[in-house]
Length: 100
Ligand SMILES: [Zn+2]
Image (cartoon, rainbow, N blue to C red; front, side, top):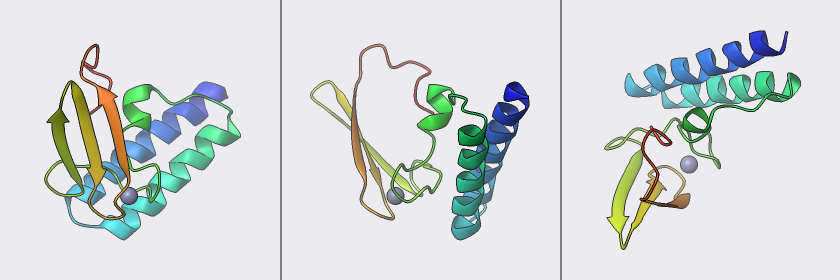
């Protein structure tokens, strides 16, 4: 049951990403939120790269050059959501595979 909910959550969030890539930003946000309700109902933890694939504030899938601006500054990757201005820093070290 748990795995089932987790799989659905991941499927929805990946699907939201494709919607956002096609320009359907509002719908993609709703699909991300739906995916998150699945993961919280099942009390399952989303894999890090999935959790980091959308904006934590406005839930839009983050796509570089479209909804996300990414800069590297003094050993950190700085990600900015182009829609709501949400920012997050990650150290560059040991980052491989942990953000999409
Ligand atoms: Zn945002």
